[in-house]
Each structure stands twice: as C-alpha cells, then as structure tokens.
Image (cartoon, rainbow, N blue to C red):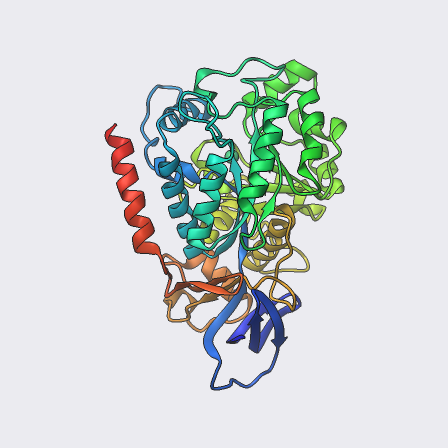
Length: 452
Ligand code: ZN
C-alpha cells in the first residue's frame, strides 16, 4: 500500500485540502479529506487526476518539425500528408517502437496518463504483411510498457484512397487491409495488449475516405463493445468530396448512417454546421479535439458555440505529436475561440467560471469515455495521478481553480512534478524514470532514418 498525501487535490466533487490517497494493487483504495499526514506518507503539494490523450499517431513524433518548410505555394494538409507517407515508407519495427516510446515519455512528462493510439501502419515497407500480422501492434504495446502509459489501442481499418472505394495509393501500402485480414489484425492486437495495465482495444475506421459503407458495417462488430474512433470533417476539401460522393456533409452522413452513441469518438469534427454539432451532442459521442495539430496543419477551427452550449463531450489529443502538452492543447482550444469571437473565457460555463477548470474537467470526463475507461481521483479508479510543483513561479500563491488557469495559460515551464500510472510512479521532478535510455534509442533511430 502506497500512501500519497496532497496539500490540495482535485477530487470529483471539487478541490479538497489535506487529501490522503491510498493506492493498492494499481487502484485507488481510499481517499481521505481533511487528513493529517502520517510519517509513512509521500507528501506532495497539488494532486490532479491524470488526463487521457484521445488521439495519437506515435510514430509521427519522429517527423515533428520537419515539415515546417514551404514546398510549394499551396502547402496544406495534403502536401503534409505526402511528406508523412515518405517518412512512413522507411520505418522498421524498431524505428516504430523507439519513436513511439519517446512520444509516450513526452506524454507522461506532460501529465497524460493514458493514450489512444490510432494505429495504422500494419505492414512492411513493401506493403506485404509481416509474418506476424500483429508485429507493429506489438511494437506499440512494447512502447507503452516501456513508458508505463495506459494504452487504448485502436487498430485502423484503411482500404481506399478516397470516397467511393477508390483504390489506395502507393504511399498508403503499409496501411491497407480487407475486412478479413483486418479481423486478424484485431485478434493480434487483443493478444498483444493482453496483460498490459488495464489495456483496452477499440477500433478505428480511418475515415469515410478510407472505408466504404459496406466495409464500415462489416468491421463495426469487431469493436466488441470497445471504443470506435474515426477521423471526420478535418478538412474543407474532405467536406466537399463527401458532398460530391453522397450529397451529405461528413458528420451529417455519420449521423444518418451509423449508430453513433457514447462508444464513438469523432476525431477533429472541425467542420460541422450548428445543426450537426447539436445532433452530435445528442448522441453522447465524444469530439476528439486536437487543437495544436489542427492549427499546425491549417485544418480550421472547431465550431464550439453550439457544441459547448449543449454540454458536448470532448477529449483532447496530440495527434501528429508535433508538440506534446496538456496545457498547450487546452490553451490552443480556448485561444482559437477567443481569436475568432474576439472575446475572452469563451469555454468557461455558467457553472464553472474558471476557463482552466472547465477545460480540464471536460477533457478528463470526455477523454476517459473516449478511451473506454473511467477516471478521476476516487476509490476504485486506476491510480493515474499527477502532482504539480508549487515551486514553479507560475503557481505562486495560487490555490484551487487558479492553479489550473495558471498551469494552462501562464506556465512557460511545465509544473508537472510526479506522475503515477496504475499506481506506479513513472515521472519524478518532471523527468521520466527511463527518459535517458528511451531518448538514446530515439536519437539513434532518428539519425539512421534521416540519414537514409
Ligand atoms: Zn489523426
């Protein structure tokens, strides 16, 4: 039994002082408020629940910063994707594992304790399946194990280049499966994750471009009650192409044809009409927002007004992993809204006046739902805990919601101090316990890849 004592902690009912959290067998065994510290307690200043990162492509961490170079006068998401495909074409399983492990270390040091890995490289560089169809799923799980992050593995179904079942391009050859072989990928993914701390397997049809309606219908049962994630309405061109194909906008098509419910997470959902946003909220599905990547790729700005006005559920994801940070995602989400509406504290609510608190609470609840788990500092939950360092000047003299506002909006240096996942401490003083070894492997792999 580990006993953690926090001067102040954010519990499901709000902030409490003098909180002792007892951890046994990976879970929170008890939470006492107004406690007195015992000599055996490990003492910390501020305790927060760990957040879920709902959307990651771990390998893309290796190309962060390499695409900020104008290649043509019309650089956009689609030219970025071509560069990404070239990077993908060269990676070995060892590269995937080392780069993904570094991404997960970065996430843990940022205060994310679980990741939803939207895993879409399945085959070898020629596009042929590995002898073990689950080779790269096993590498993702190995990266999660090495880092200690909780994993919701979302094997991606990818079969086509664009709407209407267009054949895939050569750059997509490592992603492609028919329905039958994808069922094998799902089985292998379940075997791979077996035994990893509260591992969850869901399913991810890549997009309406990559899967036909018949294929969607065939693969959905493979989710087996787990989460279902899909990229949707990220780009205006995608909206136009979907209209040309079906006469419907992407989210509208999903609402009309798919059984959307609380198991679904719509990644990006950037370009929604007000009606689509309200209808999406009514299904109970989560919007998986990736504000830093959406800004980096020039995707557009989420239609937050109708969504938040009807208490829509959202999670945050680091997607391309160009920059990994809890505060960065939440700040970008709010700032994009401020800039478009020329207003402040847009995503606060009548019940929660602190913008930081409203964003954090929303991302905590929606993130857990999207990754098929429950969260929060309460008895019975997985012991996924983050402590903040009050030695960080941005937090000087703060308490309660002002801690979150200052963490998100005013900290140049991250105040994340220690991180526990499934009751195991993996970050101390902002540094992951395996940071040096994992960084060395990442550096070696990147030097090899980029020299090639
Ligand atoms: Zn993505």
